[in-house]
Length: 591
Figure (spheres, rainbow, N blue to C red):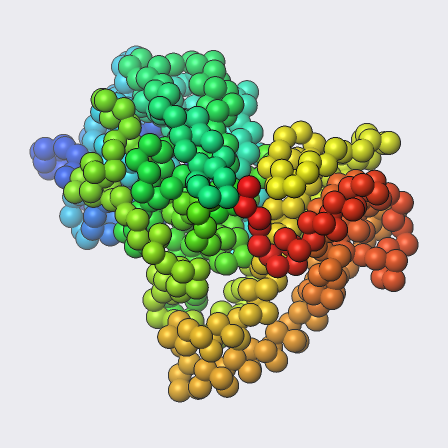
């Protein structure tokens, strides 16, 4: 059985303790101090003998770590390997499984040399490791980024989804801060943020554990002519000082989630009165934990970069939450990260605005000289096509083979379809549990942002993104013609490469499938080609009052329609026809 708190990757064999030949006295003679750009963090706050002691080294400069060198209270030396994370910031996470009482010396090495050192007291009632400075300084922000990365870590080819954030935070193999206060504080903690709440909830949870202040604002939702504007911030300093119980976090998170919404992340890029500020489109500025706000209200949180290597394409991964509180990991691509220049929003990548002694730091103070991502309005000057081209160059600087690019885009579409299967099934489960119920349908643009069962079980925003994703996949040949420098053509002309991908597309959509549970309990299997043929049906497939077959674009002439026994009311279907052009053109209307 894996001991509590040991990351699964470590338990599989990466966590090794090997006695060193170096005498303990010789190692201990070196002064123990944190590095200039490296800090070692330990968890829990008050380590107890016999319980796992987590260690994490985080650096903002310099590259990957080697391993930890640990000296136990008896002077015995061990080498502790761990799980590495990203960069920047770079991290290394490991664990001592059954520490004994006394002082441990933990040193992390890089390039064979010591990079930082910390001493931690196990037992004795005192704090084993400091909670930091109590401010959002560089070391604390770097730990936040590393914590986010390890929280959602998994092999890139492995689908990663959860019914809510709760099982993520309650998993000690993921959450470095699990039971950090040693009060069992995570056991019954509500953790069900939706899309807009997710980045705020993660910030607040981290601040609670580390004793940090947070701030958040009440904002408008904007209009067709102007992005949302916000009021003065609410400053929460109750987490600073002595550790606070879970009840304090529940109260703060409840107030926070009652106030923030989809407009909170869409504020204007140059607006100083915001909770998040825009950062440059540069690898050094896009840390895990960075928010991505699309023009229409959806929010994602970056969790990991996977660099391009050999024949493997690079990836930028993020997580998002849905109205049903499910959380899933997504890859960056045009079908998930929507971007458009519009007067109604300031879209793009944004970082949490740090809270200082006098409140949230203004734009002028976010110059990057302290090592944190700087304020930048660069994204405001990019067209949609140029934005995606710029991101593609960051993710795959060596260019992509056209066929590999197509397969990666198809995989992203299939990922999106599989996620939709779960969302539609959630709606079916609700309707079966409430027979005879008709879910009220909002009018106009409110179909995209409302509350109650419609928000939980309708899928207009998701279906809009799906239709965009389908356009992106079939439009890849034209992208090759328009941006040939993004691809490794190896002497092939852009036109020839595009024609080759057109033929590949015609073949691959016939042999890629998604399945859903029909109304009669059977299984319907649809190819991606079927879904392209059903695009007209998918333009009006978001209403939970319709049977599941209609929600997958079926019509009386299709084989899977026969079991359909439920249809949205006539007035709702009339309004859906009125709104159909939004989905056909894949262009969400302004408020």
